[in-house]
Length: 284
Image 1 (cartoon, rainbow, N blue to C red):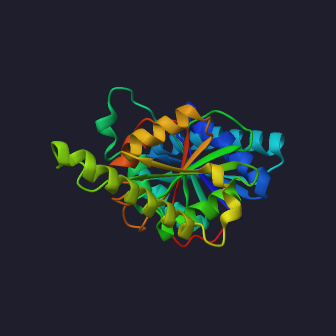
Image 2: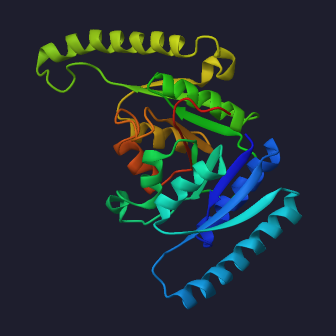
């Protein structure tokens, strides 16, 4: 990893993203690029005044990071629609990782659809880290929610490189066929057999998924749960301290409907911890 782009709004959430980005950049020797996006449409004189003021503030943050962490840091100002500018700058800067600060709106979770984070996540071609927790220590506990896809396997490899000293746990949620339609005495008998078969299929899939990289995740850190994904993820994070939740996406054009559709909307709108969304085929 050679270059990390941090998009900051110069508010508290942006400061959290800066501290996390600085920690990661120090660990891997990467350059930090700080980006603030200002809206277009101001009169020329006001635009120039605002741009100078914002750049001065951003440069101040860059200097602080250089002095504190000994990093190579550059500051950039973009103009336009925030999520569009951010996505453009990811490519222009050759960023290997994009970091955004989490913006929480308690009681307004449904409004997350269409926000900057979700729009960026849907089209971002590099790993996207949504930073929630204000910490500058390396990640020590990582949870990866997997559907056993190739994208999830790539996400696991990226997670190990991003958090080399962390304990990584895998969580897979599976469903039992016919569970919602059977009724009466037949339900118990049939469900018992279907539950055993579903569990066995999940165990086999887990072994296949980890083929060749079993050393990344120990046997005791592979969790198979019957149930709904979001609830299981939140329960797991509550039961075991977790610094980072990792999700793999299936395409670069949209979030995976299987794992990252409504799941990501709910989790990123009210993140339980830092979240890393990894698209496929990422060179790290």
